[in-house]
Image 1 (tube, rainbow, N blue to C red):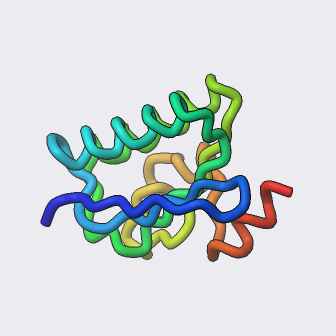
Image 2 (image 1 turned 90 degrees about the horizontal axis):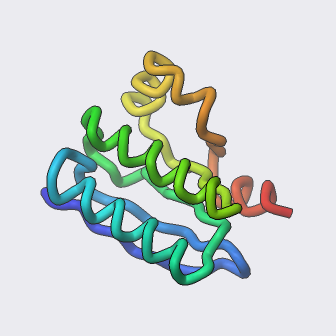
Length: 114
């Protein structure tokens, strides 16, 4: 299954609904290009909804960190929602739960930008 992104705006926040696998190759390049396009387009508030992500490998996590770093350097913020139990566990094991701001749902993430 390839990676699919659906980008939508909620007020001044860009929400990206991600589905599929974030893995080395097509998955990471799609994610990289999407974040790069957002930065170029002036979007600085981004929420990634990972509820429909079936698998993330180490390259996928690396791409999430790269997107976070790129947005932060551009003066933006990247927040995560919809993490599966498996992804939450992997994030705790790698201490990425200390890097990313994770919210339980979209409404909570959107309110956090206020």
